[in-house]
Amino acid sequence: MAKQSESTATARANLAPAPVNSPDHSNSGPENSSGAGVAEGPLGILFGLIGASLFYLFAWAVPLAPIERYFLGHPVAVAATYLFAIALAILTAKILRVRRQARLTDGLRDEDLMPGLPPGAGDADRWLAQNDAGRVASWWLDSLDQLTPTTRRSPLVNRLAELLGRQSNRASTRHLSDDLREVSARELDTAYDSLQLVRIIIWAIPMLGFLGTVIGITQTLGGLDFTDGSAAVDRLKIGLYVAFDTTALGLVLSVVAIFLQFPVERSEQLLLAEIDRRVGKLLADRLPSDDRADNPSAQIALLCDGIRVAVSQSLASQAELWRNTIDEAQEHWRRVADDGGQRISQSMLETLSPVLQIHSRAFDDHADALREHSQALAQIEQQWGDEITQRWNHWNAAVEHRHQQWQQESRATGRVGDGLADAMLTLARAVDVLSQHLPPAGREALAEQWDTTGPLNVSSAATAGSTGVPTDHPESDPRDPFADDREQDPNPAANSRRAA
Image 1 (cartoon, helix red, strand yellow):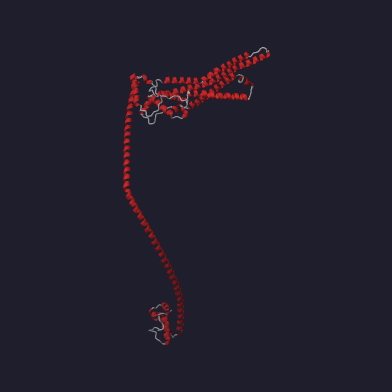
Image 2 (spheres, one colour):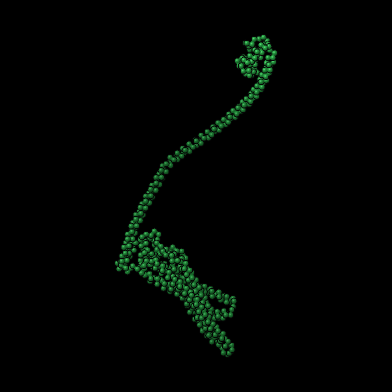
């Protein structure tokens, strides 16, 4: 059985990855479980003194007979009142802290505190989560560290963190029940010790009352003078009143403090019991149990499963190692290529920079020449434009002048045509008149001539007939410059235009 347990532990050790900067949880413990009880003592004393001082300031400002009798009748009563105020302040601070912790505990769900597998968990991590309680405790502590500061101050989280810190160094949960009992008993002892000062005050207040009674009786008996009988009896009664009033005040204050202490202590005990219950349930539900420790078959199956997972984890680790090696080699060659490219770029830049500067200057000179040429072309274009504009204006003026001349000639031609029409009309009338005065032979000749040559020749024939000149071969009138033209052109209108 011992050999099987050793082999199982060996398999768990092989499966567990090497911790890298993992936090040390061995000393994890409660942060505020006992420190709060220690802090309540000084704070209770301070606030108790302040409260008692305010009370006596009020008693001095507003004098009342009961207060003066019971609280101001003897210095021992004043001391008992101050002790009661301190106890009351401690109990008040205690109940406030217990209620705040109870609210924090009730506000936490079990699902919020349960751990999960780490990111990128593999088969080995899942096997460890089912069989290695120490590894699960470490993961659980890491998840608790991710909680908010207010949540981490909860007594439930503090108790859970302390138990997980103890369990993180163990592979099994064999001692978990002992840890639960030990931590629970320690918390109960801490809660009981936090009210130790209150118990002392509750015990001391009646003792102070008895002390005030003894002192008062002693002072009264010591000051008795029986020479004055009635006055002595009155002084005795007053002294006994003061003496027994301190005892009554002490007993009343102690009883009140006891009744105030009980609910406070009971509330804290209930809170601790609830924390014990929830912590035990959480640990039992999440941590792997040791039920198979007494079963050899289960131990062997667990060992075989661990070996299988260890082999797969080893293969995965080797593959990851090869992958990292290849990635590093690729990164190295990439850096080498980048360095080579930078050096080549730098050398090309150093080599081509002078050439590029020369070409740049040449391009600048060429650009200047082109700019000058463009300016010259612009000037030439401007000159040509001005010249063309001048010629165009001159041509427009000439065409306008010729158009005016043509209009004048058209008007003159119209006037000539009108005169020619009038002359033809007059000539026709003259022919008619001459034809009326001609003999019949002359009329026939005139008619033939009219049919063949037109009205001008008719008029000439009529004239010749009247004068005896033959008309077969008419001759041109030397005074008529258009005679030859009329002979050549049979159109009387053209002849008339030429005559005009």
